[in-house]
Image 1 (cartoon, helix red, strand yellow):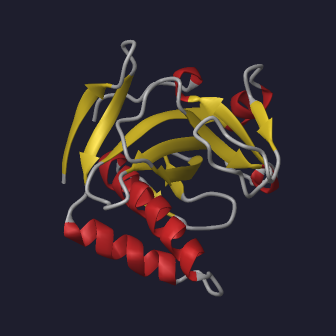
Image 2 (image 1 turned 90 degrees about the vertical axis):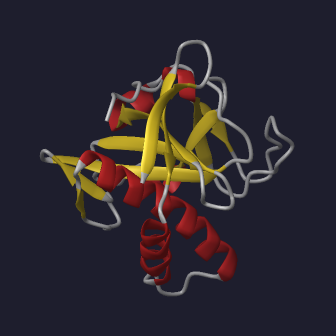
Length: 171
């Protein structure tokens, strides 16, 4: 898998990655292992799983795939959050965690975005769980809220701009 550090704007670094066919296939298999996932949910799961597989491979983490967290690295429990995007992410774009996931027993969130074709993505930053949920710039969204990009949110979630995340380190 090819990857490199890039500036997504305002001097904010991210890891740009190009997943290989094996990583995408592994992500699809992992996503299908979630029983009862509807087709639309399956597409979202694949997106998240590609980001998770890439993060695991780049940082040498261990797969856990539990409800509370996805990866284990140096004893730290990491929950990976991935979503689709059609353009290069910018520091003012937001990442989100669903309200129902607040009780997960992870220690860190790792955020990534990937193009819908699953060929190019970005690891954008990370946040300790307490930092994320207590950040003064955290924005609460409810089902039916219209987002900045015109989409209507489906779930109760909390958003934070990428620029407030801990920056990714070189890999």
